[in-house]
Amino acid sequence: MRQLFLVSILLLGMAIVSSAQNTSVYTSTKTSACKDMSPKTDTGDSYEGECPGVGGYKLRLLEGDIRQTLNVITPAKKKHELNFWGFYSGFSSVGEKVEWRVKKGVPVALIARFNVSDAEDSSKTTSYLMVAKVSAKQSCVVDVIMPGKSQNLDARIAADKAATMPCKTTD
Image 1 (cartoon, one colour):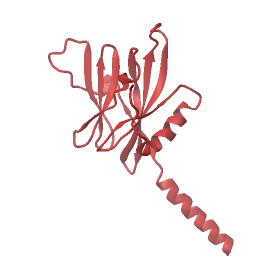
Image 2: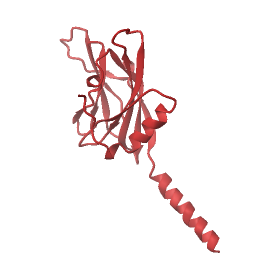
Image 3: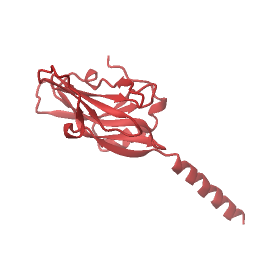
């Protein structure tokens, strides 16, 4: 009887923990999936597009001088700049798909692939995963995950604790 009670408590605890875990939702940052928001006076060397998000959030994909970054737009239309291009000076592009870490339908973090060209040989690129915390009050990059075998897993682990991490600076 005691053993059955302990197993029941253990299963209940596991159910509570698993229900509190974050899940992943993916959205596209392809220009075909985003609404062109570029100014009408644009000379063609920059782009601004509003991309789909989750939980009322959207992304703003920005491109200028062959470099890209993302801004998070809250449901209240507040803009949070992630400033990817401040971390690396080479030509860059955001991956075509981002991963939102969501808890009960509300985004808590964002993982975006960020491809950066080598300054000396632009045919060579390094693919980082930028991890940002997401909230109505503040969204910012909290970690940059270097390429490696466990890059995706490392990014999810960082994303799931992003709310408690400080914003990274681009110095």
